[in-house]
Image 1 (cartoon, rainbow, N blue to C red):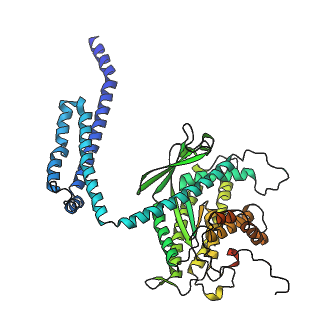
Image 2: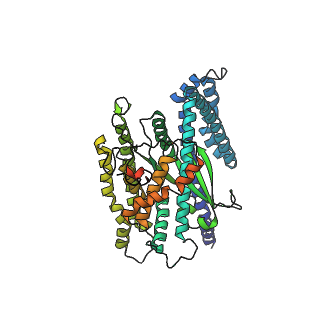
Image 3: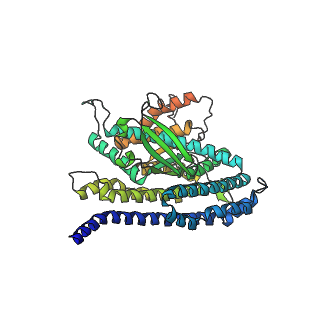
Length: 484
């Protein structure tokens, strides 16, 4: 009987003992990981980079050099043996010991970071860095504004406009298909990121516009470090009567832009975005001057045409990389929305617009590799090969890109391109006959965005070349009677 009772008591203790053993194993695993991290950080603090930083900043702290730094650090950081003894003797105070160790390491790391910053400030041209920051800020504002308008249009389309449609008004686009396409785009950016298409009409033969183009190239490199997030409004909106506002945090190396949305819009986002997951942006730049660049040189015997081709070729490679991510997203069955349509038919429907991209790729490669001469002046694209811009815009549109158009002032050439894109969009999605594209473009150039933008910038000189193709010319008045 006594043996049975003892056996019963031991069995009751088994779960407790097992729990203690599990906790002890977890504790030892945590400590081993901690010691490994401490050793890695210590080796960095004793490395050649830190030694060089102390050497180059010794003038700022004459009384504290590398030797004093290491003499103070070694006894306070190399304490793994003390911690192991501490666990056995006084395990209840282990958290405070670990916390003290982390604070000590953070103090030494902060000192090294300060010295590295001083080194960077010593050897960095502050004017160049200021210029880079200014250009990056301008590009980021353009990206945020363009994406927010694109996003609001998609969110409004997802649930419909909320107004009753006119039954007599022809609408070639099925509302259900439009809503489904909007939901797919939201899932797409959540999974594959956002493609941001910059269209440049700058003329690199002009010194100031060449500098603008170079600045834009650097700004797009910085934009690749930006991540977009979404949060729901808590209380009143940050800006009155606006369904969306923004907040920016982080550093140059990892900048976060948070979009605050009203509850109605926030609820329409994919689950992963509502849960706080962000997505990267992938900026690409396609540039083409509106006039022929034959005979102009960029630098180091590189012609302006070759310079433009280098930019466009690199951007086309980035578009192809994004296309691969997008294709993988559509072929992943877990990303497909629930539907009664058979999976194979649904995948075919989703992939059909993407499969048509091969011809656009070939056209883009042809534009990039072709050499334009004055003899091309009377062709459809003109001597400049400006048709590349339209094909690039179509290519990026099929991939769900957000578009930004730029020129030297944002007034004249930009609005010519925007009105052309508006007419093409009407033909692509709203049933405008292709033969009416130029007529619609001329109408939009007489009113709307171009007129309003020009009225706000009356002192800006129009630097649009006189030799631009017909697609980028203002509507000419008819000749007087009797003139040929």
